[in-house]
Image 1: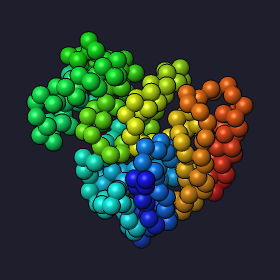
Image 2: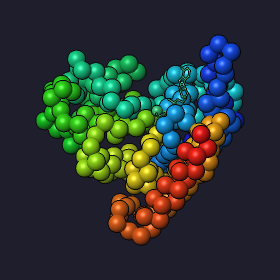
Image 3: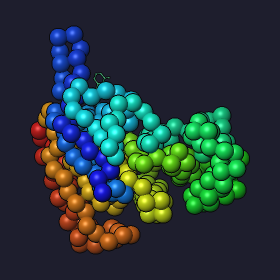
Length: 252
Ligand SMILES: Nc1ncnc2c1ncn2[C@@H]1O[C@H](COP(=O)(O)OP(=O)(O)OP(=O)(O)O)[C@@H](O)[C@H]1O
Ligand SMILES: [Mg+2]
């Protein structure tokens, strides 16, 4: 089943007489429960694309369909996880997780039940009353992830959710993110510029080129999960994506 359709999406920014095409003519479809990464060089329009999908910005041309509905503004059907976790620092872990449900007027009992389930799933039992500054990077990231899930979105949009953590921690978080995703079976679109992260997590990687923001390639990663980073097939996918990224850079 197709969950998301992006049809001939274009985005142009103007500054005085200067107009710049950031997204040229982007079309792709995402299947329900697919994990898709958007990979590309810095400045190629990844965040712009994600924020248009989120409804935070308007496209200059084209359409986005989620299910059969046209996306034009933010909505609870989409959840977000941004780079620096974006947790509310004045709320505890549990209050952060409850927040999207409160906004949707979910009854208190159900809110409590869902929060308890998600906190347990993300191994945050005992941390319910901690504030974000009292958490490790991994705990913050897991809180941000389950907070996004608490709003019961149809699709989760993530912009470099692991951008701020070191290499070792990043691998651990990727494993945790994968296991949470496998449990929730939700459609995910994740922006990254880390090839290893894209191969570890994605069913499919859409590579964007800088030149007029077009899709350079759409690569399926058909490796069994959890993935073995040492496997030859894993390396092969990385090599292919690295060479595509080099090509994407050259097109600047
Ligand atoms: N509001 C805006 N007004 C004008 N130009 C913008 C605006 N937002 C983004 N841009 C330009 O669009 C281009 C793409 O920006 P975007 O943030 O989408 O890149 P990105 O692929 O997410 O990069 P990075 O990997 O560094 O996060 C950049 O050249 C940027 O300067
Ligand atoms: Mg960005």
